[in-house]
Length: 220
Image 1 (spheres, rainbow, N blue to C red):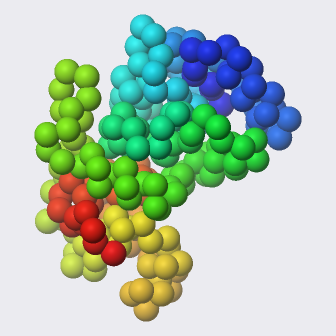
Image 2 (image 1 turned 90 degrees about the horizontal axis):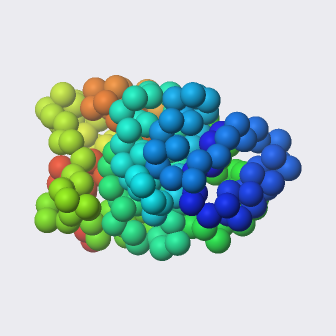
């Protein structure tokens, strides 16, 4: 994996934590430009990306990396959970976010989770984050940070139902219980939704569910 943060002490600390837990760290970057170049050179499976960095911030670096690589996963680092830049990163396809005061074990577990292709979603925090910033008039930098609105007409009624529940933060197990389906069937529906809407993972699906109105603030 690659660690991108403008503070050397944080990079060193995270590297020591991850290496001690058997996770290979292939490189470090001190700003967004270095992160983009390092990702293309080193081809890490996961990038741990700070949001606020000089030269190029983590949001623009994430945009560049995910626009170039369909394989790489990005985990955002922030000091504030309700951060509009985190929301923008999720809309771009980041696989989740971590607060910088994360515990060592949680950090390693999060990296392993997104490395499997899953998204790191703490439902309560993610819901509050998306509810706060999914409005059309929220801006990041010089322009709007809305996710691309895919055509939901491609989905079947059951797939729309599944996407709505994913947007509310339900896991596959909870979806299976709510819809009286097997987990295998739920996984198939979720995979088809992702393929039809060109979604990377559940984090992007949650954002899309709010931005298209399938889920609205206050839904349970």
